[in-house]
Image (cartoon, rainbow, N blue to C red; front, side):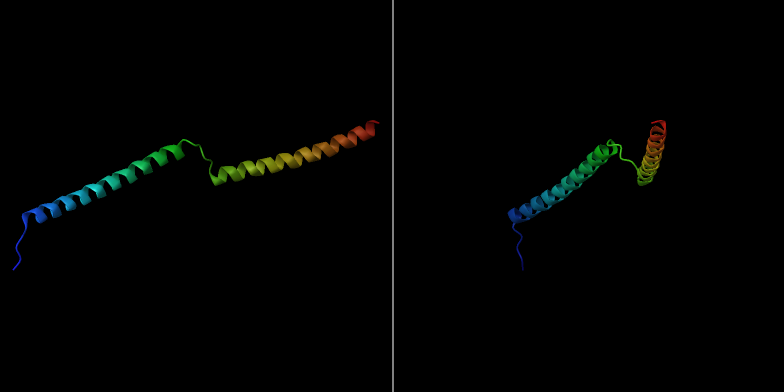
Amino acid sequence: MQSQNPIIADFVKLVNGAAGTFAGMTREAQETARERIKETVGGLNFVSREEFDAVKEMAAKARAENEALAKRLDALEAKAK
């Protein structure tokens, strides 16, 4: 037969309660950190991949047009001399 020591039983209850509280605090801290990260990242104004690719394509087209115009200008200047 086992005899229950009330001091040990109270200590076990205390430890179980502390473990539950600690687990709850950990979950709450994770949720708070997750929310702060979402707020921070949301305010950084990231662009989507599609927007980036569209601007990249526009820049390449503008660069090609600029090179063509530079060649045309060089030809006109050579003709004028």
